[in-house]
Image (cartoon, rainbow, N blue to C red; front, side, top):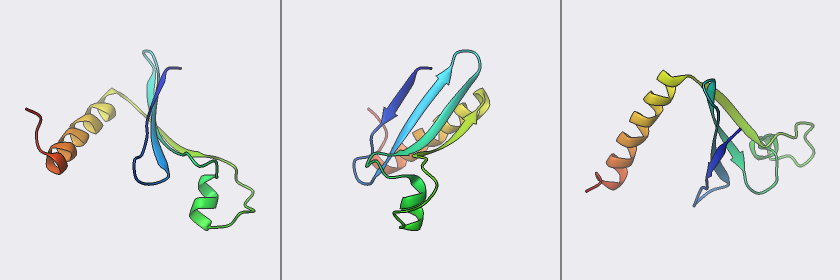
Length: 82
């Protein structure tokens, strides 16, 4: 499964996009400090959950909507590309 990671420049969460050709695309948030998501959310060091990401799977229409929203957000935050 190919995947790409977009590293967060400010906080502890990276965005990862993975896909299976002609099947699906997954978009997820992962920690890059080695701690589980549950530990981040609860602040506890002894949680039974040891997962480091949250994932959703999307079809073509969902990914197209995500791309449109990301472009709109980018242009609003940083201005349109020349």
